[in-house]
Length: 137
Image 1 (cartoon, one colour):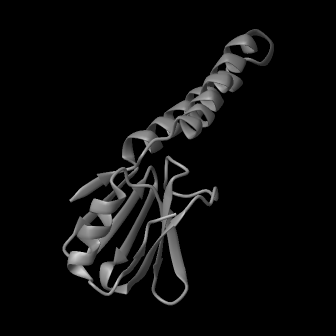
Image 2 (cartoon, rainbow, N blue to C red):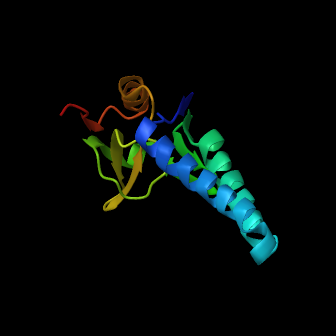
């Protein structure tokens, strides 16, 4: 089962605003700086688009796959200890600030932002009922 990342307006503005600014700067500076700035702007926009389209969390058998552009993290669901609501702004495979921290193994964690957090947690608990879930404020 695949869960796509929630996409918050603020983070959308930050990401796409950065890409747009880089492209505009590249276009404005094309005569002075050559093609370098526009190439960088296009590459940045393509990278952000890649992240935008490929950020999801997939549950297959006992594996949770966290995907975001070049990031691919496989987590054994039986090692997940807890799901906790967080607004931690640290860089993560999440396109929203309304996030879940997944604590697994002894000290590992990853922060994600599935659209339907309750359904996501329920699917994980079907596989590992020992997961502690704290998605309330």
